[in-house]
Image (cartoon, rainbow, N blue to C red; front, side):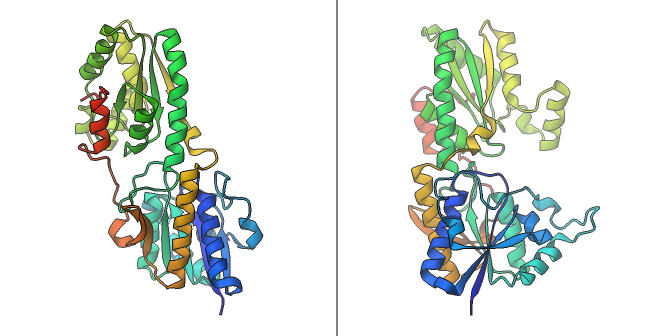
Length: 359
């Protein structure tokens, strides 16, 4: 009897999604041959809710190892709305369960980040056979040392910072480079160290403007004609850190800012003669071909997921722990964000290099 395997990619796109899909498919076909059918669910949970899917052929997985994005398409369907019946009167959970059964799936693989994993756990609790695969450029999924997409995003963000060095030095400016990372600062931390930033601001370490100005002044006193500040989009001041998320957003809206980056740049200009510019790396860090590291990691994750399918192990998410591919129970990791510990070794390394965190 054939085993029907559903695959969907949900949330923000990132390099390595196609490589992971390929890893799953090639391992599944190698282990099960014609006894396996793979069903591609389109545009993430939206496709599962609305029954948008297609049967895939082995040829669909050829040539996608190096391709960024996702051949299945993706969308964001917030977990907070999964159990809410909206104006369309669709009970999303009931619809997903129905379509899972209508597709005659034996299991469903969900490739995504924290929100995706929360919904995956919800479906697992509803009795569906689910396997999660940890995807995010933020590297903030609990229970795994690394997520696929992270290393490629670090390479891309580092390249942005690298290129800012020449224009910053030519014009003797303070350049603030904003990098994705609303809750966790892994991407900003690693790319800033790799790119030689002078100040790193991440959500886990609230900053003080006086400390930022002090770091800039010390560089100027040493004859450094320019400075580069890497800012995670979720960075916040020590005063903002005392506020709730909605209060912080309201305060920034009143001041005309969405993130801290431009606010910091304006404050530096007010307090000094330093000329400032803001660079938004934005969605560039999501794009492009996956790095060699991510291709290998994605292939490892995909092959391991195929092994779990064959062993009928469900309700889990694939992970890398201490350089070994393993798995965690979805119920143990879903909804938990992996933040950068303030005593993390990389922070210590950065500080030993004279890099300021504004604290």
